[in-house]
Length: 218
Image (tube, rainbow, N blue to C red; front, top):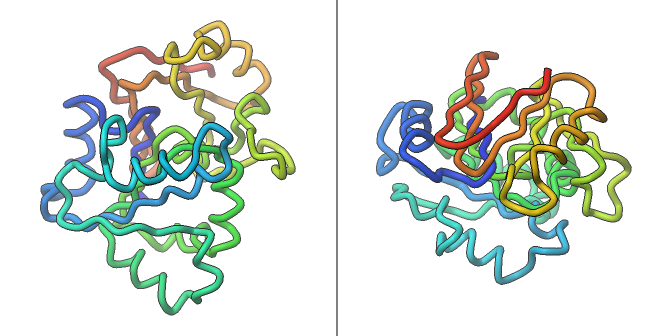
């Protein structure tokens, strides 16, 4: 897949331009599916925030960027309806908009639903992650970011070979010093990114797109 891994979504012109480049056509010509599933695993999220993401109301703007169409793909429902129904929906979408929450919960339901197994065949689909929706693509998220009580550990899908520390300097516990301590416990490369930064991954090539602050811990 073509990945746009963000901390806060499409928050500035540089990230917006990168998204359009990845799509290969105007946003107004693209069909989107939004995935709010990660929110159910995080204690700070709930029905109101899920509705906000799906409806695209401030501060959740991913679903209101002017897409041709926007549908909801709730991963927890997929095992009960069968792949013959939901797989065509995913294949027909130009972009998957994946919200934040708890990355281990999202990882669990990506595997349970079968979406994780489908990813390698979605070569023309763009994945736009927000926070946990980005972190789920990494090998590990670190114990500090595990909020789902049933998570066996901090491991996630490992689609990319680096980890992500999101919301740099957005919350009191997300300072650069906190990111450095977190990175010391993560094997391999890791990025700390703020909400004005995204990481583009295309054909294995990694590019940072930013109008804010970020740091690579290598």
